[in-house]
Length: 84
Image (cartoon, one colour):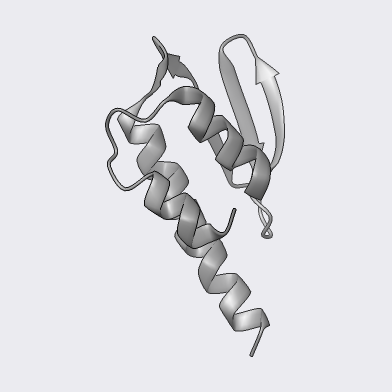
């Protein structure tokens, strides 16, 4: 899956299945470190940024989907700069 495909899959912040969000995070980020219901992923850029996701029933929480989308957009920009 490409970053563009992942962003398309997360087009809506609502009604995203947790397992879809988890798979996208596993594909692009380091981790997860699981603590209880929290799945914590480390971003592949310097510093200590993290994305934390957890289930809300069988769905992902909307604000966490938004955080993952923002991280994917940043990753896309980094990859574009590296390819120049």
